[in-house]
Length: 409
Image (cartoon, rainbow, N blue to C red):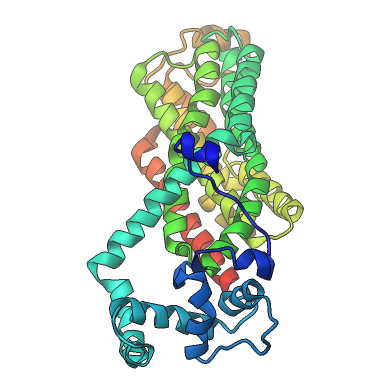
C-alpha cells in the first residue's frame, strides 16, 4: 500500500471465493449480474438490502460472499429472479432517498417499460453502437496478439504465394502456356480457400466464450455479429494482399493497375465468403474436428463445380445447383476475364500449323474456348460477380447470427 501510495498507482487484486473474515474487510461492494448492477454500496449493508427483497440468509453462519454470488448468478438461481433483483436496484437508484418499500412500488412500472425503452429509444441505439465499437476494439487487439487468428495465416498466405509464383514463373504469352495460366489461377483460389481451415478452431472456441458473455448480458448477439463482421474485413484484405500480390507479380499476370485492383477485390470478396463460412461452422459444431471435416468437404464440392474440371453442360442435373452457389465459380470467372479479356496471343497461327493445342488468338476466343456453349466467360460482369460474393458473405453472416441465437436458446 505504501509503495502504491507513493507511486500514485492503482492496485487491483482478484480474490476467489473470499472467506467471511476477508469479506468483512471490504468497505464497498459492487454486485453485477448479466451485465447489470444488482447492488452497489457498503459491503456491510448488502445482506440487509437483499433481506428486504425477501432473500435473507437461512443461517447466521453463512459466508456472505458465497450467499451473494449464488443469489445474483443466473447459473445458480432462476434467471427471472436475478433480473428482478437488478430491476429492484434500478428502481432504488432512481429514488435515492426513498425507502425500500417506496422503491419497490415503482418496480412493476419499470418492468413494463424497460423492454421498450431499451430496445427503441436513443439510449438503446447509442448503447448498441457502443457495444459494437467496444467489441471491435477487442477484436483488433485479439487478432493482432493471437497468432492463430490472422498472423499465422498471413505468413502462410505469403509463403504459398511465393511458392506458386516461383512454380509458375516465367510463363510466356504463347498457346502452350495458356493452360498453365488457367490452372495457376484455379490453384490460387483453391489454396487460399483451404488455408481458411486454420480459422475454424479459433471461431469454435470464440463461440463458446460468446455464448457465456451474451447469456450474462455483457452485450447482445446482434452487436457481436456486426462487430465481428466489420473487424474481420481489414484482416481479410491483408490476407488477400499477402496471398495475391506476390504471385500476381511473379507469374506476370496482366500488368495493369486496374486489373490488379479488380483481381485483389475479387480475391478479398472470395476469402471473406470462406471466412464467413468458417464462422458459421464454428458456431454450428461444438467439436471443431467435425467442423473442419464439413468445411473441407464443402470447399471441395465448390471447387469441383467452379467450371474448370467439369463444364456446365456435363454437370448432372442433381448437382446443377452447386454450380450456382459455388463462390469458386464466380471468382474463377472473374480471374479468367481479368487475365485474358482484351489480350492477344500472336503465336496462334503457328500453333495451328504445328498441330498443337490452340485456344485462340484473342482473349475473347480463349475465354470462349474455356467457357463452352452455355457459359460465356467473355461476357463476365466483374462487378456483378463481386456483388454475388458479397451477398453470399452477408447471407452466411446472418446464418451465423441465427445459429448463435439458437445456441443461446
